[in-house]
Image (cartoon, rainbow, N blue to C red; front, side):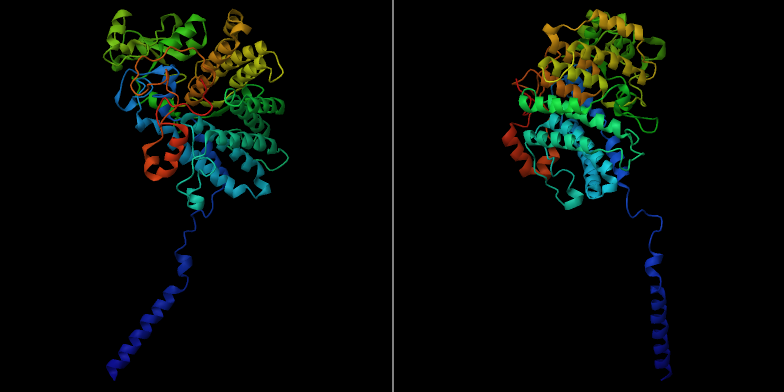
Amino acid sequence: MRKRSKYILGLCITFGLLAGCDNGFDELNTNKTLATAINPLFSLNTAIVNTAPPGTTLPYELAIVQQIVSPNSGVIAGGNFNEDNRSVTRGLWENYYRNVLKNTADVIAKTSDNPSRSNLYNMARIIRANAGMILTDTYGDIPFVEAGEGFLTNNVAPIYDAQQDVYTNILTELDEASAALDAAKPIEAQDALYGGDITKWKRFGYSLLLRAAMRLTKADAAKAQQYTAKAASAGVMQSNADNAFIRHTAAFTNAVGNTLNSTEANNYYLTETFVKYLKSTKDPRLASIAVRYVGAKNGAEQVAARVNRDTTVQIGMPMGYDNASIASVVTAKGLASFYDFSQLDRNRMGRNDAPNFLATYAQTQLLLAEAAVKGWVQGDAATLYSNGIKAHMEQLSSYADATVPASSINTYIAANPFDPAKALEQINTQYWVASFLNGPEAFANFRRSGFPNLPPNPLRNDIDTEAFIRRLTYPDAEFSVNSGNVQQAVSRQGADELDTRIWWDKP
């Protein structure tokens, strides 16, 4: 009896303690410092800063348009050899899907029904449309309407939209979102691009609308003219103060600058085509862009004592050579080694903290110049052309020690006047220069316009039917995780190869 009483008492004590522990259990196990919701503005800012092209533009886009090239292979093989290096071609895909489209989808979902965040909603639509344009220009058919829905609706196998449909969507989004931005409504003063300046956001949106419209000049001229006129009349960028660019610091670095100042510091060089063009027209921008480590026999000898920024001594590296065959060129030019060729100056435009320009007044003026030549907008093509050149030269003051003197700008424009007989070539060659370091945009406009008139890279490797790479190939992962949809895109668009033309890229 005594033992039984002790047992019952023990049970009572045990259950009493358990009951006591349950009091306040939820409160005790709740993290009072953990955020329960994220301000969608933070998600937009994440998308904005990731809109800057990744360092993978060095092996491909900048090499394809013959501005920067490497004679080395391995992990950086790509446009330098016309080689399908899928460990690199996936770079833009992963950056824009994982960072930009995912975050803008989240912002749009959280703000679409909230009138107090309507400006944030429309800013996200603009950033999303721009990312979609970069992706579809690079790869062709892409998931766009359903992109970024994996964490919202569990759709992990989005349908690939035909590029023509993607562009219809992009034009609509840019048009509607730009028009809907309203300074009378609550602004987002902490946005990473314009700090809540709605006027600049609207001009950015309409400048992107102009860019998207002009992309269709050969694929759908009527729609191109319609939206070009709409963008121009609504109000595009008016000066360099409207430029859309990403700011960088020593902690948050420029992807291209980071690549050039770390593992690949001695691997990349300005091309012969680019340097020769700038020298042939006595372009003062070369002095802001180039450096040569004269007499360097290896990377370790690329030191300050060998620095020469004089435009007359700059020598670009020709296309079509690897690090063995380039030796014959080195000997013929009397150089110490291929390390003796001109490079992007890593202490100025190639710095870690250099800004990254997404869309500019210079590019916008040059697109308007072409539209004026076509009779699609009002304005004098010659004036717009000169404005574009001047704007880009003045834009270089955003980089450390790269300012072009005003007198040099005026001298250049006077010495290189607009020629109506060569209008499209002149305008788009200047667009090529004005888009330097924005690889995806330079690559897209080169294919659209056919200018500048570049000599094909002699190294053919993985292209057979075209003189140049026309697109980048889909990531291998897409064939594993979204096989049915990517295969449908390939059957509609053409082989998943570097020389398959995308919809708007007409011969």
